Length: 313
Ligand SMILES: Nc1nc2c(ncn2[C@@H]2O[C@H](COP(=O)(O)OP(=O)(O)O)[C@@H](O)[C@H]2O)c(=O)[nH]1
Ligand SMILES: [Mg+2]
Image 1 (cartoon, helix red, strand yellow):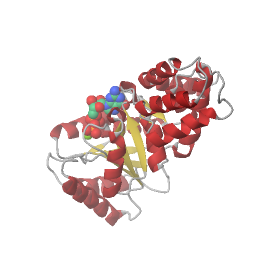
Image 2 (cartoon, helix red, strand yellow):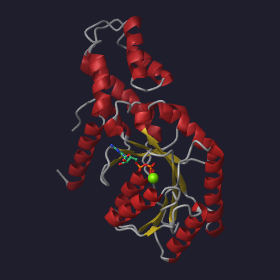
Image 3 (cartoon, protein in one colour):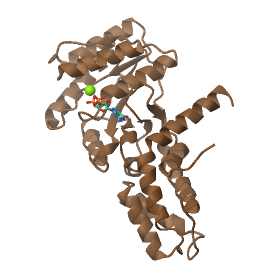
Image 4 (cartoon, protein in one colour):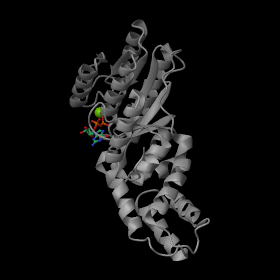
């Protein structure tokens, strides 16, 4: 096996382990249904199972109906159903599986990270920083969540861990001013990437919108093409609530893509299918743990196989 293949295998193992709660829910649900003829009643039960696994009503209906093609009135096996569902889910996810690409024409490429408190923004910044550092890029972090002192310290720790400079101010400092300062510094130092953390006080939507708009306005004074990406971080354990969060943030700022975290801690990995169906936003990566290396690229077939608990070679 080549190094790259070995690395891929490792990724898939970790993704599969991270998705084990979701896959065991779907797999055990399916195995309770097999050995029967695939009739309308069974199709409906499968549809319900997929809805309880957070895939969303529309995709669940589409997937269940898809199973009937060529199989109606036939006895189906567990494996057959899982393989067929994985293939159809992969086809649904394929269009949104897109990595967060750093454009070297931008110096730096500015990524604004948004999301509600606790969704995993700061941790995701640490993971992205590690990933880009491993690719040999220079990365600067901006502690734009100035609301809580702990948030600034947390980002500073990630900076130390990943060997990236952190621009931080005092607690309560103006987030936009800090973002401006960070961009100025990153430009002067010729950084490849600037990752900007933000606060996620969603209970005060007006304040949050004002803050995010101001950050964007001031960084555009230096680079009118920035931010080059605005990534919404979503916690998969919130299930269907993730859909509402996307809608809310889309109303506040121009979201360019998603990163979905905490897939290791939940049986709700199916929500990725619902998100893809509803919004069609790129999914750049998924979080499967709290460490810097616990982020996987989002690849449609791997994810679908992981979700259905299918072995992969
Ligand atoms: N299990 C797990 N925990 C995560 C993941 N991402 C973040 N966390 C944890 O979730 C909590 C909140 O994360 P944090 O990055 O501080 O969220 P923020 O408020 O959006 O910045 C922390 O305890 C993180 O360690 C993940 O992918 N898996
Ligand atoms: Mg944070």
